[in-house]
Amino acid sequence: MEADIELAREEVNLKFADTELEGMSAAQKHLFRMGPDNIRRVQAKLEKLRATLGLPRP
Image 1: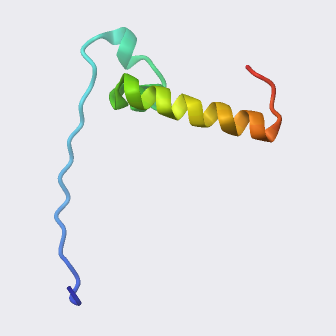
Image 2 (image 1 turned 180 degrees about the vertical axis):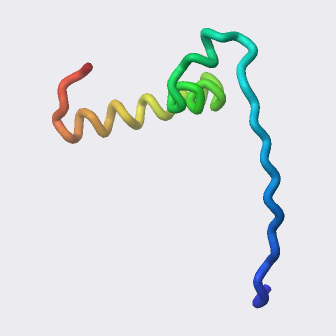
């Protein structure tokens, strides 16, 4: 399409009912919502990046 596409804003805010889960950081909640398989993939990539940069393990 050559013309601009009009978008409408639709906001959806969800919270974990479990207060312990809701208390996680935004990054932790984002990872948690990805599911276990994707979490492992992200962690593996971050570990590879850490090693490449020569950073110590936390």
